[in-house]
Image 1 (cartoon, rainbow, N blue to C red):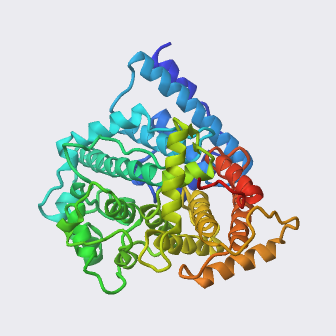
Image 2: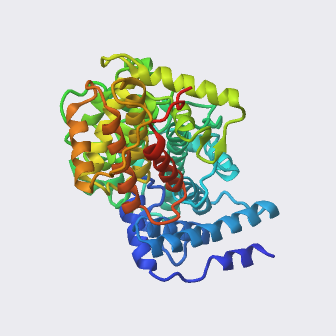
Length: 483
């Protein structure tokens, strides 16, 4: 089969294309703005890119029919990518790079069977971008020329757009790698090792400018236009500046740059002292809340990454999953016992805010509060964040509440209103208050109910979470969870 015939497999028209594309631009594009919207044409776009954008847009509509359509599209793309790889037809055209990375985003957060590790396609693209000098080198010339670069010649414009697309793809690779490790307890890739760190990544221009920038004469720029262009060449410069903030920024960073900074702050390979930032195991960089996008979506991202920073996520997932970390079973009983003991020691912690578990509980309560008020923030992993928050609360209650009778199973299920009131009370009590197991059970029940409402059937990643929540609700008080 030729590459042309493979392309034909993805060129069939999809119903609701306009609706799916609009959903992509609204929900997914702000998080991963790797496509230049002004120059994008759905009809002439690479089939892989086009299909993946439609799949992501369809899934973000939170409708079961659209979700099924999204997975069908995604699985068609997956088959094509496997055939391309088998026949050596992979390319490094920008449009294909964009398709590969957005396909990876769907695979991680929205596919029926989330991958245990990042794909070879992702790894190859990441390594390719890290080794491209034109991509990693951020010009230190005039910011208008360096970040805009658009001129009067179409060829020059195309080259500049491709360069900035690649920079944004590199940033997307880095944030995906960090989030995959932190949210799911996975190993980070080694793609950047020996070449660069997260702190030396280019700090690209704002999305608001990126989404409208094409053939804008420099001489008609307003001061606001120039201010919208990044004033920092690399991430470490932006972090150093951000750490000095004492008041809310009048021009907060957009979702991509906010996520990049948060990922850099939580990357264990980054030496934050180079940015003048000192953080220990119990403190959070609260100054970031003054600089990031002022939205429930970005606050949820902040509290989720901070929760993961203070939590042995892999060990806790293994305990809650009874030796399973998502689709991966631990290699031996000894590894499972080690995970139980590690999670137990962490969950017991101390009774003050100076322990990692107290910081984790604080962030968990903030996540629950955001989800209570904003059930649809636009985050790709909102339900997973709430799930992590719920099992953090459960682990803390299980290991510290000695008054409740262990192994007692309540017959009467609280009403939806009673569950919500209990969750509100737990949030209001704060992380310094002791958490009783009954309150933790209500958090589990409420979380399970909310996820079932918001996530279509057969939702891959969240199916696993719902299974675990169900078990914790019915037998989460039993002996032996933490060895």
